[in-house]
Image 1: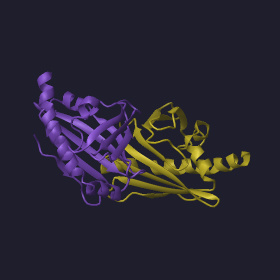
Image 2: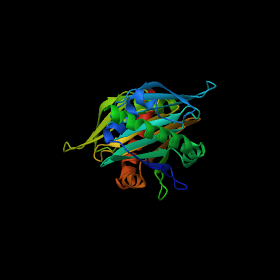
Image 3: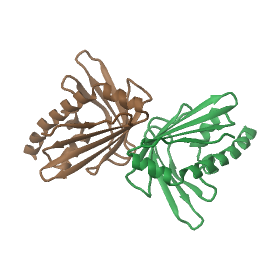
Length: 160
Length: 160
């Protein structure tokens, strides 16, 4: 439903993302940690998401692979700080195409009546790393993933 | 030996720390992950360091407690992103006195002949969190800890 807002101030280490969804908080949280749901929405439509591991607990590691139609794979991995819950998810993030560049991601789910706003805060080890993430085209992948999530959520609400 | 340099640009999410030590890289790394060594130097002299847990592997969690002479305890914890090695340590950090405020710390050990320079990069979820860390008096605790490490290293080198 909503439009994704991305704030990346010049010279900052940070990216702030805000997006509203027509779903309760607990369901939106579940869409972020349930592997069967994640593969239905995370990332652009032309890539297949493979979940190598997702251990949603304090110190649990996660690794996702995006695979294109030619079989080219893009891996991402990280670790959870604290146990993910509807109160929030804190995790590290590393794109395996740029090893050694790590960011810290914090996601919260703010419920307002029938909708929930996701706030995602990413901070990078350097401003250059942050700028490279912006330049990578993350915005279109993010928007497309969130559109897919908009489509998935009513189906999940319908089945209860 | 060296003097600790701390760079914290106004309005930035980051703290950069540089410090030179008269020790080889592998030994300096060991002083950061060996619990018997850590308790001999980490933090100011008037606090006792208790290591609740330190599991130095990818996804391993750590928790340290600083205890003062009145028994007051200050807890810190986090998780390792990647397995710590002399090539570097990447971890999250949360002071339990300010729960929910997490930073990402990256430490590298750069050997130059007989000395090794530690570079520590911390990025915080907000500029306010970064400013609060600076205001907390971290500089004096850091300096005192590094002076204690300066004293410990020759004893470790002597025993081989």
